[in-house]
Each structure stands twice: as C-alpha cells, then as structure tokens.
Image: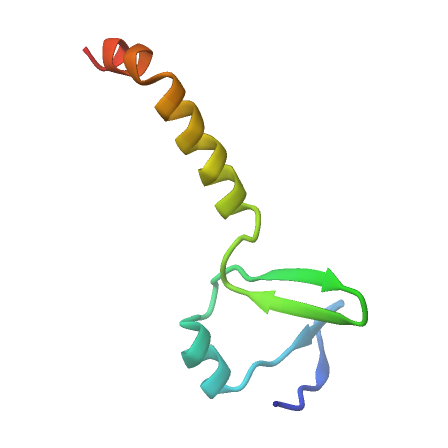
Length: 74
C-alpha cells in the first residue's frame, strides 16, 4: 500500500504516483489512466474497463457477419 498526497498543479489538484507504482503499471508521463468508482473504493488502471466488453461485442459481430466482411475486403 502506498500513501499518496494531493498537490496543487496550476488550477487543478494532482496525485503524484511513486516511481515504483509507475513501473508496476507500466506508465509514463503523458499516459492515460482510468478511475473506476466502487462502493467505498476507487481503482486506477491503465486499461479502459469498457474495452474488453467492446471487444467481445466486436468479435461477435465479426463472427456473425464473416461473409459480409470477406466481401468488403475484396
């Protein structure tokens, strides 16, 4: 567990992540992270939580419409 401090950055408030956390999450300056709310907690992740759901739907459409996609590829 890490203790983080909120700090003033211009007109905003920012959270400074320790080097170890950045390394573990494979993050660099300028990367985007996603904050997900949960009852009594929050999760910060470098992965879009909606992406997996979107990919599942895309795979289903690609499977259902395989022939149409083949014709479009020609």
